[in-house]
Amino acid sequence: MIPTASAKAPIVVTGPEDVVTRHISYADLNLVSPAGERTLNLRVRAGVRSLCSEATRADNSAWQSSENAKCENLAFGEARPQIGRAVQRARDLAFTGTSSLGAEAIMIALPE
Image (cartoon, rainbow, N blue to C red; front, side):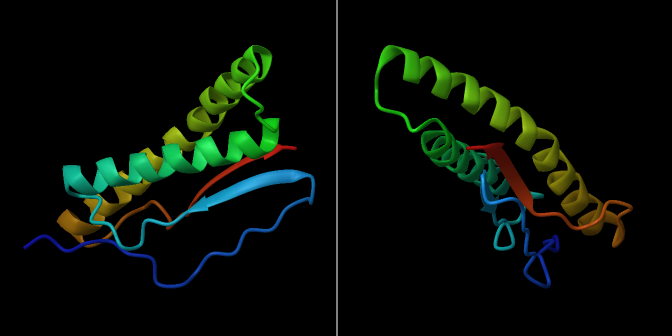
């Protein structure tokens, strides 16, 4: 059986009030498994959609849809390295019992 990596304590992130943020938890996921990694990606994508909808105040106009798409690409680009580090840390811990990577939460943020 492969051990899973999980967060031991909640991580609180604070920032300026005019920044829209999303914190995506993965404490309950086994990121060593492909299913766990897939679930994390789905959670992040949902967080990105929610974040960008709020940040761009999407109203379904063509211009707004274009801005929302740009926002989603930017936000997921910000999240992608964090996902990679979370998965690598889980693998390190599962296979060696240690990791040089610190525990992180996946956090995406954009100015409002």
